[in-house]
Length: 639
Image (cartoon, rainbow, N blue to C red):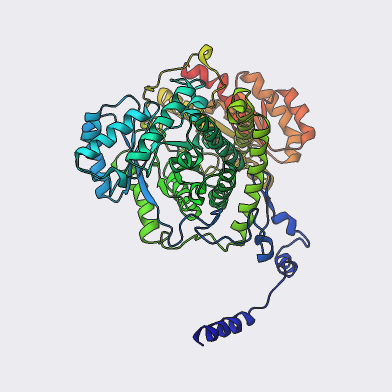
C-alpha cells in the first residue's frame, strides 16, 4: 500500500513536467541568439573531433555503446565499480632523496590527511631502508605504494618482509607497485633491462603476491607518457588500453592467466583540464577495459573491473603565474573523482620547476580534503551519472578510442606500433596542433598567452637539477622516444630570455608603439601590439601622440627600442606607413619594425619598405617574438 502511494505521488509529480522535444529546446535557444538559426554556431569541436552541442536530452544519452543503463558496480562498470559510495584514497608522492627526511615527511603527510603514500624510487633499495620508511606507519591503515624503474620483485619482497617484522598480516595489504616497463621504454627509447626480463619479473611478482598479498598490485599501465606529451583524450585512452592488452598477452606467455594479471594491474591515468571530457574518459575506460578483458575469458566478472589511479597532468602547467596551476589541478582533481578514480595524486603547483615546499604540498593535499570534506563527492555514487552531456560524451569518447584501439590491433599491437613510430607520430601531430593553437591564442593558458603579468620575474625561482637517470645514447635506442613536455615552454623560453636581458641591461627589452593617428582603429591595434609583446616579457612604451612621420621617427631614435610597432588605421597605412618604415630603416637598419593589423593587400608593399613582421589576432605569437629576439636580443644577452 505504501509503495503504491509513493508511485502515485511520483507519477503526479512527473505530470507537472511534460516531456519537451529537443527541437522545442533548440527553438528557445535560438530566440536568445542574435543571429537567427545560428544554433550550430554554439557547437564546439573537441581535440578528437567530437561535436559537443550546448544541450542534450534523455533520448540521446540512453543508448550507450555497451548497455543501456548499467547501475554502479555492474558490468561494464560505466558508472563505477563501487555500489554504495564514491570514496577514493588521497595519495601523496614522497621522494627518497634522504631516507630520514622521507620517513619524517611521510608521518607529517599522514597526520595532515593523506590516506596513501607513493615512495619514488630512482635507484635500488635495501630492505633496511624500507624498514626505516614504514617504522612508524601502519600499512593496513595507510596504503604504501612504490614507483620504480626496475627490480619490482626485490622491492616487493623487501616491503613484505618489513611488514612481517612488524607483525602485520600481509594478506590484508593493499597497495601498488607503479612499475611500467613499456612506458619506460617509450620514454627513453630503450630499456634499462630487456623487456622480456621485466615481464618475467612482473610474472614472478604476481606469483609471489598471489600467496602473500593478493590485494597488492604488481604493475601498472600509465597514461602520463602520452598525456604529458600532448596526446588527445582518445589517443591517451586507446594507447593506454593497448598497453594493457600487450601486458596481458606477454604475461600469458609467462603462464599468468587473465584473472591473476587483472587482479594485480592498476591503470594510472593523467587528468587534464578538459573537465567534462576527463570525467567521461574514466567512465569510458572502465567500460572499454571490461569488454576487452572479456575476450581473455576470465573466470570472474571481478577480473573485468578496472582499478584506477589518477594524477594531475604537467602538460598544461606554467612557470609564470604559477598559482593558476592550483585552479587547474582543482578542476583535474574534481574530474578524476567524479569520473570514479580509486586513488588520486595532486601534484603541487610548483613541482615542475622546483622542489615543492611545505606550502605547495599542503595546498595540493588540501584540494582533495576540501573536495572530500566540504563538497562531499565521496558519498555520492557516480556523481556524474544522469548528466546527458556526460553520458553522451562518454559514448563519443568510447567510440573514438575504440576505433583507434582497433587500428593499433590491426597494425600488430602496442609494441609493433611504437617500434614503427605510429603512436609517436599520432601524439606528435596532436602536440604540434595544440602548441600552434596556444601560440595563436586559439587555446588559452592564463598568465602565459592571455593576461600575463608583465612585472613578474620567475628566473630566480627555477631550480635546475641534474637528472639522476642515465642518458640514453641514440645508438642504443630501439624505439623513438616520446619525451614529456609542457605546452607553455616556448612562451617561457622567450620570457626567460627577456628576463636575462633585463638583468644584464637594467631594463626590459623595449617596444615602442608608434601611433600614426588617434583613430579608434589605431587605438585597437595599439592595444593588440602592447598585449602581444608583453606575452614575451617586452616592455611596451607609447610614443608621442599623433606625430608626423619625421617627428615619430625622431621619437623612436630617442627611446632606442628593440622593436617598433607601427599602429594605425587602414587609411594611415595607405598614406604614412611606407614612409615611416623607410625612414626608420634608413636611420637604424637593425631595428625590428612590426606592423599591427592592416589589410592583406598592404603586406607586400610594406614588407618591401622594410617591415619585418605583421601581427594580427591570428598571428603565431611565439614565432614572431622569437624573430624579434633573434638578431638583437640574443646578441645583447650573449647566448
